[in-house]
Length: 115
Length: 116
Image (tube, rainbow over all chains, first blue to last red; front, side):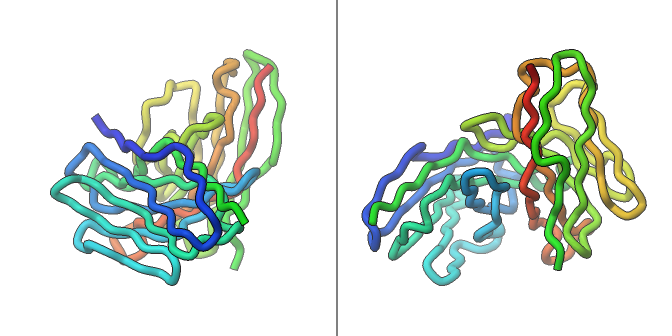
């Protein structure tokens, strides 16, 4: 069935270090992979996304890589700052007429950046 | 540019009651999706509305129903509330169709529902 596995569940890094969060999806028909940041008491905020026809995408300190063969995708945050502390979710969107917009989310990663 | 708005912010209901949650999509968006987020979990898809019709549904019982209005705003209704319905209910808006940005979903702040 449709499933997205996310690791690690918690991640603690020193300010300035890099953080990497990894996800694996089950359905090879997935064609879009967004990442969301959720701060306490707020809704998820879209921070970066990648489509299945692209292997890597970068936006300032954040980047996402996709390996379609292995069905893996990862979020990389460089030069982490305390304000990066939040819960991060990966998601996968299924392709096809019967799956026109459904996102399947991972379980989330709580990132703590220590000053 | 107004983002996605949801009301109310918080709601406390008793088991067996009914609840209605409301969502206004981001300006220019015509598609609304609803998700349920239990504490410590990722959001789970409930259903999606486009052109005032339910276009896709997740694995939720018929107690969960919705509606989309001509102005693209949407309501989520839950009947016969159970304790297990306590969660953060999120609305996400997007563009319908197959354009470049049609995949992007933007979330509102959510409605925290507590069932006692």
